Length: 470
Image (cartoon, rainbow, N blue to C red; front, side):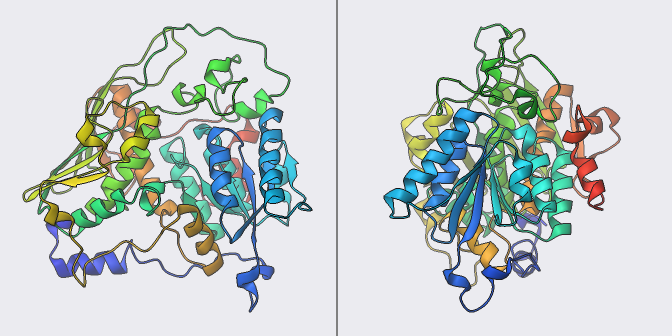
């Protein structure tokens, strides 16, 4: 139930006993992580994907005392070598020069290794589902970047697999943790506890992709890249460096992020972050909108194929309107009968290419400072999570749900992908969060999933072989 339509007693019961209650899970734990000496044992982690964000994720894992990075994996041999060097250099600097770091070109070899307990999946969006589903089937705990999957059907399938195999999955929705962007936790907690009264409108800015003016020109596949495996489940097509990742840089923004076959653009890229927080604040982390309509521009004959300009309107129970528009500053503004609260990443959000007024750079602000004062005893509070990566590792070691579990990140993806489907169909859609389907709309429901181009890249077949209902 949304906060607006509940009594305080009902709200507390729902929050504490329902989606916010992190119950014990009968998760798979290696024997060496159990027992009296378990706190002294390291969780053996493999990094899958060693590009810009992959090395960022891995850098955070390396600093976590509960983890030991023992393997890296990438289909690009240059990135694979860079990833291994990063791990070796780190441990040498910390007096552990004898550590054997394995390098794999095929993630199946990672999943087949009995010495690996958990994997960090930082690959293009279109490959999230297959890798994560196969990792769960293999009994590996998972950290997967957001958006958790490419399509709605994939998110549902991943949730079912994780629940069937009883493993711990943390989604890379770092705004749920205290570092480095605690403004989102504080703002959403205040809204969830009714600080701004009845919520009327939520305004979200997720930045803007722009067309390049460059026409797509196929190129020879570089020798260091296994392009067939990189394509995975996506439609077959000629290689274009501008639609994959830079060959002369490990840190440049990859072109797959602006190519619709591999990712859906800002609506799922940054939308997965901000809509996740909005649904958290509204008590809809296990729900979703009741309707969605959108307008967007899509470049033609350009390297960029994802949407550029956009305007999206989602309506939630209680007639709460959530609006995403490219003219809004990056961040989330909650507006209610008794005031407003705005939260953002501040200066760090510049990395997304957004345009800001100076005041919007402040990470947290409100119409009245009292709206952000400490909550009273008995208020609903998010569970502690100082470090997003640390929270994942602690969840593995204690058999508890992490701060961003698949049950909730699947719902965030559904809202984002529903907005993208509305962009494509150019009309208002009705969404049923209970069935996770569009109401009476075959064309919209057909866009909930995409068939894999080859059987070996089909997550549904992997589930079927494992005896998991898709």
